[in-house]
Length: 151
Length: 200
Image (tube, rainbow over all chains, first blue to last red; front, side, top):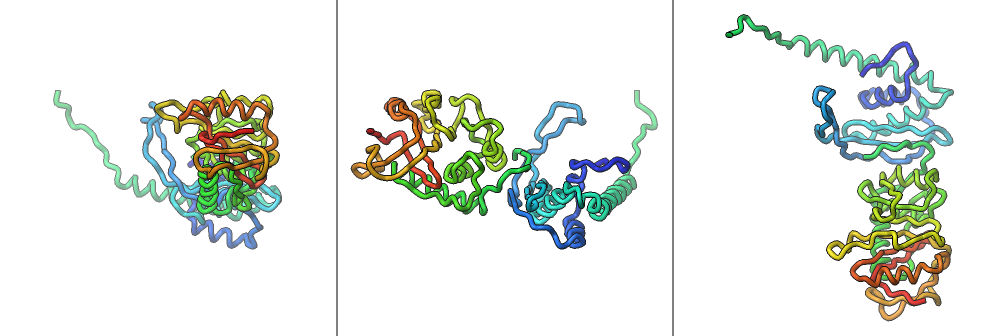
């Protein structure tokens, strides 16, 4: 995940952040912005499977890598924008909160404030998680080299 | 899963599993008793403009990403976006490719011959049509007979083009090939399987 820090975040980027964030962090963030505005479901959280496709080396022919469990949700704020979430796994509450925050972020009157109070902490947490994972991985790296080639 | 934008789409069923099962049950009833008028539990669905509650409920129940649909709904209609969002069904411009036909405004342009009547090896592959009509009530009008009807069933239907019944009868004469039809009006539903003989 690459998120440019200077330009304002696009909807695609914040949807990505909300989907990857820990549900508990999202829950805590939503408690801060309480009371939550009323909303109705367009599609209640539901779990299904998606086929994940990939390309060998990122450039080869696409192939089906495997199926992943996914939960999706769409909702609409009363008289306002609608939000959608697709998250990996089977946590309906996560999908609901992610869709709700997605809808709230599209509301011009509170988008900027939420961006600072909800999204920014999630981004920095995801960054530090990624960094510590990269460090742990780097520590186990093994360098292979050849002393002499038997020719 | 097909990803479709949720902007301005109305909700589907309140309880997708239970509501779909209840509607499916009424579709079974309708097909088992041709011409009997049933009330679809359509209060559980918010039908978009252009679709009756019965058509919306039956659509949510029977259509999914594996059923090709042909419809006369305009391409930009909210009803089409709604079906695409909730059912994820693909639409075909060719009625002959469609497993289901959704006919929201049956008029003289409706050509039943273009729908697929199945083959002798696979008569079950024939198209099923949902047809919106202006009125649907019991009483003098059409006289129906055939499997599922004890003697005679009468049905009053308004809002179909003149050649609808003769063309249907001709298509359904090549049994086991034919078209299965569900007539919908408001929250009412009547089944018309290919085996039913209709006399005006």
